[in-house]
Length: 193
Image 1 (tube, one colour):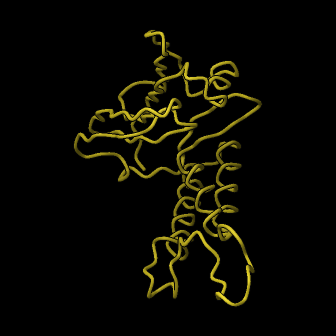
Image 2 (image 1 turned 180 degrees about the horizontal axis):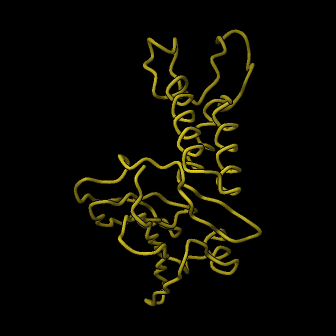
């Protein structure tokens, strides 16, 4: 259900629905999220809501191997909340559903493992958040400017790209885990979420 609501929001955004409709849809999305999944305690949910294994009794054999459908949905919807869109080989960052309270209120360190298996740390400024995409760190930063992407490459150069879309060549480097792209900084205009 959560994924269906998210897909509805994506369509509404693509159709440039009014801000009032978008706000109502976003509120509904987070009401659905609060009603299921990891936001519930074990006592409220009656089980571990994000347990990645089947709840099959030991003597019964596997009834649902691997992750439950809800855990899969949580993974898919989180990618959607982060605004990661693959469109005809391009990579678009459009975090329509990302809440402002997810951005850092004080500087912090982001630790990750790169495509070569090396551990790294990256200092994150206030009003940012980070995650990895194909083991490439992506840093979202709130900024008083137009949307832009800054790509740091392994040869030490940087590319500044206006907007929020990486072309097929750059996206391909990320998807193939070539190691050519070392860091992606996405500058997001300030919003009133």
